Amino acid sequence: MKWGVVVFPGSNCDADCVYVIRDVLGDPVETLWHQDTDLRGVDAVVLPGGFSYGDYLRTGAIARFSPIMQSIASFAKNGGLVLGICNGFQILLESGLLPGAMLRNTGLRFICRTVTLRVDRTDTPFTNRYTRGQIVRMPIAHNEGRFAADPATIKRINQDAVFRYCNEQGEVTEEANPNGSSACIAGITNQAGNVMGLMPHPERASELSLGSNDGRLIFESMRHALAGAR
Amino acid sequence: MLAKVYVTLKPGLLDAQGKTVKGALDALGFHTVDEVRVGKYIELELHGLSASAAKSAVERMCQQLLTNPIIETYRVDFGATAKPASKKSARARRPAPRRKKAVARRR
Image (cartoon, chains in turn purple, yellow):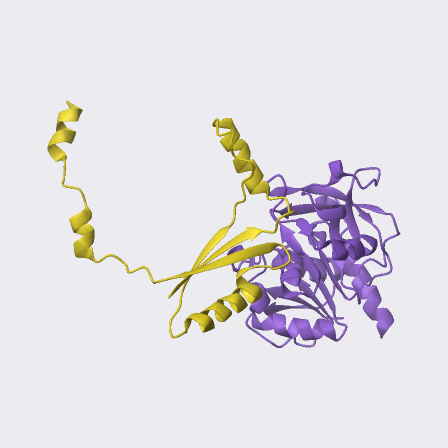
């Protein structure tokens, strides 16, 4: 399968995503420039972390209007797999491809540290290589990671959340919630299940030499899902 | 025409910045402040639009880009364009040099 990693002005995790896909997974990968509209036949799209367009106005607010996002919206509507990491998640929210919005962390601090997450769903193309309830470790690095939505949406997402912040025992508690996110939500999919956004960085946790390779299973799950679809 | 857009977080959403500023005001002895909401202020210089057309255009701008309706509310005020002061009038407003006084103070 061929992967596409989008590069916006201000993206800074694009090279890490390309590295993991090309050198760790061994798959072909293309970088997709934000001004392009051609997805070059990729089978899955990754929106990397960073500060697209300087986070001007709101995180992801301007990136949403870039030409490549119009193509990605159609790609997603046709069932294409789209993974948004950190700022990529924020872009998906602003685009309306995922429900909800991000607010500043309750502590008003940029948080950069490894957190523990609980995998609550394995019936998605992004998590089929995990076991349900598995506790995984990945770093977060964000200032706006407090997930919010209207009460009805929160209620629905609360049942469908994919990743939640938890303690070492896998208990989802407010103490384990680093940013004040609603229902400790760290990652969600859309209702169709082909678009996922998460605040933690799986590309920074894909090799044991970096402290954790738990994130690699997201990329491997996507590959597995696409292989099964063929 | 000048449109002034005031954006704040929706009531009910924790405004962490506002809460922190309130705490700081408390620390300064301003105990009469019940709540602080910190928001954004955006000025739009508009041309070629009637008052009602401007109103509906700014409304659409707020809905589509300037605010995120999921988490933010906004209010728009319209006014006349603020004319930038000319160089001459800026000079006229500047206080007279007070060099002598400054020298005296240094001694």
